[in-house]
Image (tube, rainbow, N blue to C red; front, side, top):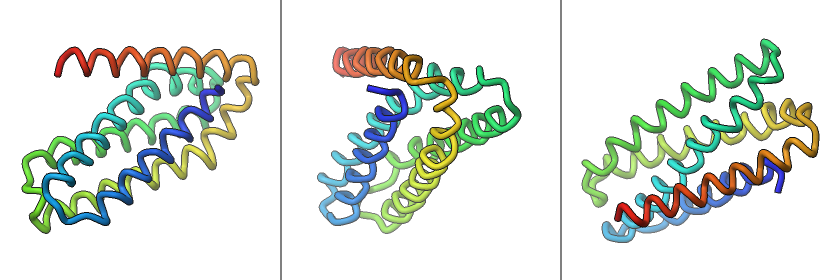
Length: 151
């Protein structure tokens, strides 16, 4: 699977989790969904930061550099909100507000990647995007295994 297809699939999966959390008021279910969102975003940001963004940066254009720098800053903000959420009661209105902000941040980030960065990444070529996607999938699987072992 091409790297861009893998990332797009992850965007869709996280978006579905956000929709589920919006529809429930049950604190226990919200907490479980938050854990799923956190795990998904941690894996996603890791493979982007370790593998995808360096490949895009390797195109050595100012546009690529600017896009990667902005994406890294967006990741930073997402991580800040994710760090705060476990401290908020899932039945508190602040939880819902923070989830809305997080969802909007992630949606904006995903839209920009899909509309701009992924188009630029096509310059890497199909073979490189396929190979990169395979390496990213392997890294993601390793992260999931590590998470299970730590739990």
